[in-house]
Each structure stands twice: as structure tokens, then as C-alpha cells.
Amino acid sequence: MIDVVVFFFLLGVFARLVKSDLRLPEALYETLSIYLLLAIGLKGGIELSKQPLAALAPQVLACMALGFVIPFALYPLARALRLSGVDAAALVAHYGSVSVVTFAVATAALTRQGIAYESHAALWVAVMEAPGLVAGILLARWSLRDADRGRRTDWGSLAHDVLFGKSVLLLLGGLLIGAVAGEAGTAPIKAVFIDPFKGVLALFLLELGLVAGGRLAEVRRFGPAVLVIGLAAPPLLALAGAATGWALGLSTGGVALLATLAASASYIAAPTAMRIAVPQANAALSITAALGITFPFNIVVGIPMYIELARWLERIGA
Amino acid sequence: MKKHGKTMLVINAEGVLEKPLVRDLRERGAQGWTVTEVHGANLEGVREGAWEADRTIEMKIICDEAVADAIAAHVLATYAPHYSVALWFTPVQVLRPERY
Image 1 (tube, rainbow over the protein chains, first blue to last red):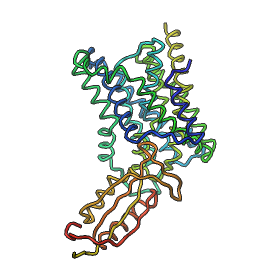
Image 2: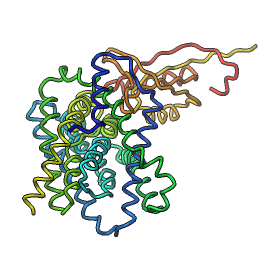
Image 3: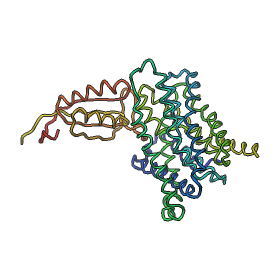
Image 4: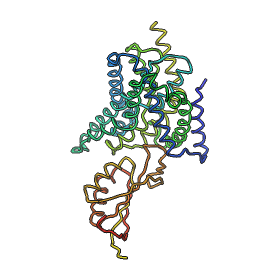
């Protein structure tokens, strides 16, 4: 059974395809995204307050390494599909980074199915945003090594934009507030930040459906390469994510979440960072793959597959 | 009422360029600017500003003609090859010239 929030996404896609005039106000989109990031962080932080931080170090390092390696693993595939070096580099950076909303939908699916997962998983999301972007920029610099001699990446400014950008700031801020305040301290704001989470996620997915529906028309423009990457990358990367989670000894839900994070593609942090760091790359190509193909694929088909994969790993491991 | 002639330079650009553009304006002597979010279309396609990585901005800078020319030349050389930018000039009249 498809999770109810996914229906909202499909409604958004449908509205866009039939050229409806439905459009969420920009301010509401901003508010919803701030809410989701803070709520995900807070929820993770409350659980974080209950356990020793040192035990999390291997998970954090493994997540960062996974995010960093993904672009290098995916780059040859993108090149084999005849994308130029710089376009391939920018595209794979999107896959190295992560999508918070895909993660949120996966947690909602796990909760509905009663599958336990590490509640501090929001921490993985926060640390997985940047490494893939760095790897993508390195690949782009390498692919442009002759044509672009003399151009330097402003790593300081880029680091500032990513680390203090809205998503990482709110996720880590929420985690910290939740960890410091604990369950008792956050009880008064639970009615706003914890209970209505799924309803807000549904509304946000309606908006993302409208946006993703708009990108679907672009798929034809870029041909089969984008379609192949957009559909083939998520399951392959999910395998790598699930294997990493399994090796770390995560719970079944945790393995499914790490598989989802590995399979997800960023459509907010990555396009912005790549546009500044690698302006030569075709931004529309990357966003069409990440938001027009991979995001809907993960939301509708991928997440149930990754949960099954985690269950299967649990069975053969037991 | 005494009026003074100045030049208004308008730059339409991708939202990600806001920070670097503001830095460039400052460095070239602009004393003030206004930024608004817009959406529309150009030769490269529609920029509808559907989500935060798809924003388009319009910057208005009122300054001396020489400053406007220097800014425009820099924007053309630095950003136009890879980014979507549009620029135009308009003569304007202001009341307090020292503010521009």
C-alpha cells in the first residue's frame, strides 16, 4: 500500500501535467521547508540525548565516506552515457549529496510499517550533504583541467554556503536543541513540531509534485542518458547504502534509511553549489535527473524496494 | 525642485549570483541597490522560480554612468558566458545625488 503522503505528491504531478493553476505561495513553501528541517532535527536530537555520542562516530564517518565515494563511482557511468566531463561531474554531485524530503518519506513509511530505525538518523542526513558536493567539484575541476586552467574554486565561500546554508544549519540546530532540551524540555513544543509532521510533509510533497511535474517535460530534451542515470543510479546506490548500513550493524530500519539516503539526489543544496562552483555544467540536465526522475522514482517505487532490501539483509544475516 | 541626472542599471540574473553580484557592486563603487525576486522567460527558457534553487533576481542600481558601465562590463565578462543574465540602462533623475 502506497503511503498517503505519496498520493499528495502524485496529485501535484497530475496538477502540473494538466496545466492546473495550482501553485503554493512562495512564503508557504519556505515555511514548510524550514518546519520540516527543524522537525527532523529535533526528533533526532531528542533521541540523541539518550545515548553516548562517541558511539556515533563510526556511523558519521561512514556516512561521509559514502557520500564522498558515490560521485566517483557514478562518474564513469555518466561518461559512458556520453555526457561531457563537466556535465557528468555536476550530475553525480547531486547523487553524492542527499534529499531530506526523500529521507522524511522513508521515515514515514518505516513508522507506518512499525519498523524501528535509529532515531538519530537525522544526523546522517546532515553530514551527508556536503561530501558529495566536494567530490563533484573535484571531478569537475579534473575534467576541465586543460580548458579551465587558472580558475580556482572558492572553497571557503562554498564551505560557508553549505555548512551554514539553511538545511544543514536547521538540521544540526534542531538536533542540538533536541539533544540539549531532551524529551521533557521539548514536550511543550511537541504539538507543533512532532505531531503534525506527516501532514506538513504531505503539503510539502504536493508542492514538490508540482515542481517535479514541471521537470518531467524536460526529460525528452535531454534524451535517454538522463533517464538511464535517473532510474539506474538509485537502486545501484541503494545497494551500496544498504551494504554500508549492514556493515555498521544498523537496525533494519536504519539499513533502509541509509539505502534511501545513498539512492537520493539533492535538488536544493547541490544545484546551488554546483551552479556557483561549476558554471560550465548544464544545470537543467542535473536537475531534470535529480528532481524530475530520481525523486519521483524513490518516493513511489524506490523506498518500498529499499525497505524490502533491508528486510532481506536482516533475514540472511539472522 | 533641483534634479540630478544618474544612470539606473538593471540586472536580471540567476538567484545564486546574488551574493557575488553584491560583492562586485560594492567593489565598483555602487552605494545602494534594490533586489527583488522575479520570474519570467528568456532565450534559454522559462525561469519560473518554482523552488529555491530556481530563483531569479532583479537588481536595480542607481549610480554614475561610469560606475554602471564598469559594473556592466564586469558582469558581461564574468557571468554572461555561463549564466543567464540580462542588463539594461535607464537615465533617471534623483533629488539627492550624494546618495548614489
